[in-house]
Amino acid sequence: MANVAVIGAQWGDEGKGKVVDWLASRAEIVVRFQGGHNAGHTLVVGDQTYKLSLLPSGVVRGKLGIIGNGVVLDPEALLSEIDRVTAQGLKVGPENLRIAENVPLILPLHPALDKAREAARGQDKIGTTGRGIGPAYEDKVGRRSIRLCDLAEPETLSAKLDELLLHHNALFRGLRAPEFAKAELLDALLALAPRLLPFAEPVWERLDEARRTGKRVLFEGAQAVMLDVDHGTYPYVTSSNTVAGNAAAGAGIGPDAIGFVLGIAKAYATRVGSGPFPSELFDETGRLLGERGREFGTVTGRPRRCGWFDACMVRQAVKVGGVQGLVLTKLDVLDGLPELKICTGYRIHGEVVKRLPAALRAQAAAEPIFETMAGWSGSTRGARSYAELPAEAVKYVRRIEELVEAPIVLLSTSPERDDTIMMRDPFAG
Image (cartoon, rainbow, N blue to C red; front, side, top):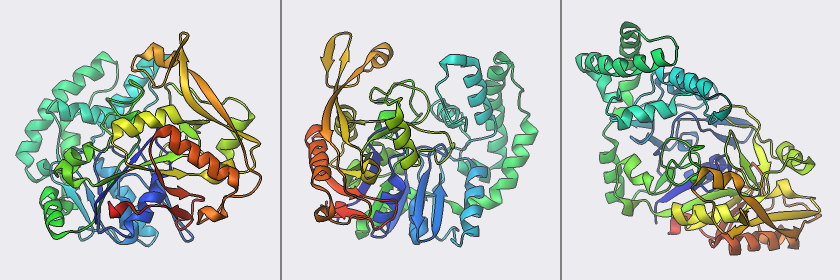
């Protein structure tokens, strides 16, 4: 049996939580390999709804969860999330959650810098969550990060804070924002150390053992390909690589161990925050999609922008993300619409193109080229086989397969875990 990597194929919020939860029941280890608590997965299990931002989704199913070194970890956010799910009846401790000892930490100065920069940008703001993800990744690349392992060495921690504050307080002065004091940060981190260090280990060793013993591993991505810092709609992107290739670097394994790459896409499109969205709808249909799909950010609560399915963009995500099969979610949201549209390309300054360009002004100028299809009058909600779907719904799914040049291997027809049609088992490779 193969391992599986799950990534978003649009701008995030595609319903990865349900899919990962569904797959986690058959995996033995679930690994988060990038991102931070700026992304959220909502899992509906029976009468319980779990909203996870840092915890790997597998903990809901009693699986071993691993937070890899590619994540930036806010200690307070993690401990708060553990307390929240514990109150819901889950047990989370070092026996079922391990954290890479070299994971970079998000400190209070990171969200402060994030918010100060966004305020300084004014109308040109990127639309970050303000949770310090970007500044924390900057420190990682700048070799200034406080890492989890540093909490075990107070003298190292103290010296690294000096260097970190030398950099950050200069930025705060330039932004006319309050500076941070070393003593307060040092005391807070040393107080957190006894709660965090029991989770720490060289997780690459555990993953190497899992590989040698044939255990099934599920790699859980956050955000999506079109938010990738290299391949997305830059600069309106996240601060990490969201493509499947980063599962290797972000977890500490070889790329040949990633296994089957599963991309997640909604049957329409949504986006949170700023940035280009060629197929966005500003009419009653867009509002209807938002209401039916309950389109509000899991982490931010912000309403998501809604639009028609953009096959051109998803095809691009398939190619650069290494996607071998797609999951199409929220098909039921389209029930009853008289007609549907699929974006098949863009017109940019009079030229027809089949990809979203890298240049910012060209992205903003992209006008969608739509193909119109008939809607369906029947219901797809809760369907668990193709035989239960209206004929026009099947045609819509098949047309998406053709346009994105990837097979749809799973089809989700409601938020419920078992309302899923499987055409191919991703763990079969």
